[in-house]
Image (cartoon, helix red, strand yellow):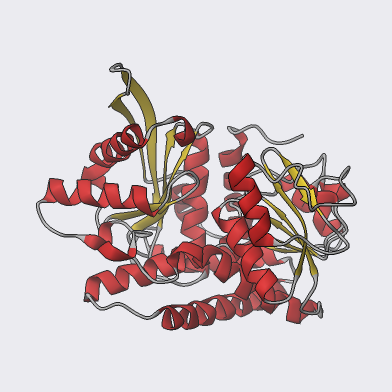
Length: 416
């Protein structure tokens, strides 16, 4: 059965204990890696359009900053929990370490369905959240970014609110901003693009040819952009799902742009008129070479892992596979490209955005993508080497690499 939201941080802690044991980390380091350095819980009052004041609960978890300022997105979602935000901040710590950028890990969230708010209510909530955490963020402290339910427009409001508080321009406090106020070229699809580079590297290792079949679970920003990138590269997208249903066409493949237009019109990919065949199966059960979970955590669990036929799973979402499902898939011989590597393209280009903000000099899109490909390809090879060295799986190899880097920073700071 799918894990409950409260179990997410338990899973993150289990991973920490497992890797600490493999590396024989001292208790002084392990104890500091089991909980965030700081967790903020705030109440955000918003005057709704009917004139009533409604309180929204928000969080910011700052997990570890031994390697640099905390870094992580802010998600607006009705199922956000304190434990989820803590887990995501832990994963961000390992993510920045595995791609070797000088940042730590953080994460934020607000319990809200943003689709139920008017534009005015959404802006007031966004500015209110930033005001509530403003003493604890900054380009040298903690740098938020977009996540599920947020976007460049919301980041623009938050940046503006922070600069009003500080009475000066500080574009590096927020990444994922609109280009007009200091955003980076390529940032909007960087999570998917980085995942594509990691996938190419994995396919070379296992001998899977270009043009393989792909199923994508989740058709938001990351899933949609990944589908576009893969389609353009000659892959066949045979199945796509969202929270309301699945569209499948194993024979011809799904036209990505047409499918997105249908979703925008109807609210879902379900019942897409161009789909045919295998409709009775979920996205994850399709006979596809590659499965890309690109929605929320715990989407693949003990009840559906046995049904998966893919040879490679690229974790574009954070924590999409429960520990129980992970073991099942490993026994099946599925190569899993773990989230802390697979979706690190977003935070990597966020780091590039910070660098550009600091210099006041902005790169062309081609230069951003060239640098991103270099980081992702090198990081995949680093993880593969750890996998081979420890005779383990890619996920464990990625965590070994990340933990080693974080632990070394903690030692060098005297945090032991």
